[in-house]
Amino acid sequence: MGNPAQSFQQWIDVIKKSVMTELVPSLMAQGMSISVADFNNAAPADTPFNLINISDFNSLIAQSQKHSVPVFALTDEQIEQSGIILERMKRSREDFRDAFGALAQTIEIIAGLSPGKSEKVGGV
Image 1 (cartoon, rainbow, N blue to C red):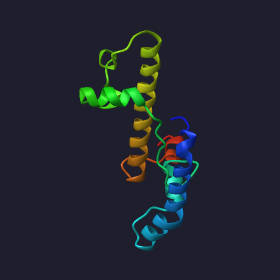
Image 2: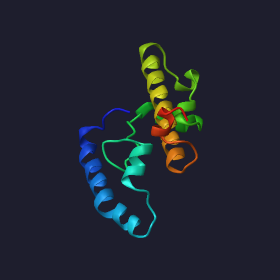
Image 3: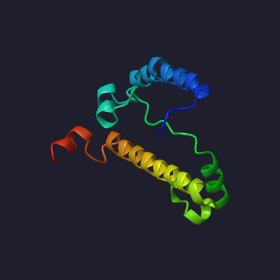
Image 4: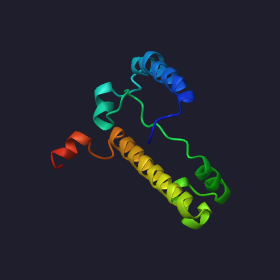
């Protein structure tokens, strides 16, 4: 989904660290979290329990709100642009759709609603 702006990276790092050192241990102590191995089987990532990083979609978010539809469901007409700007925004819309599709699939795997990625490789 792209890298976060440098101004946000420090906050992302703080959140990731807090999740691993405070939130996850507290949840695991209560039996309310899956293991790191189970998470990594569902969603190999740079940091366990980091489901997704979502880029800033600026104008698409504004159009999404204006038309009361999800970003990935915006039509070309609702984007209200033309030429190269429309093409860039269409690519961003598709990236957004792909990211949320992957997120949904990861959540299904974690919840046990679909086979894990390692199981799929075996043809199951």
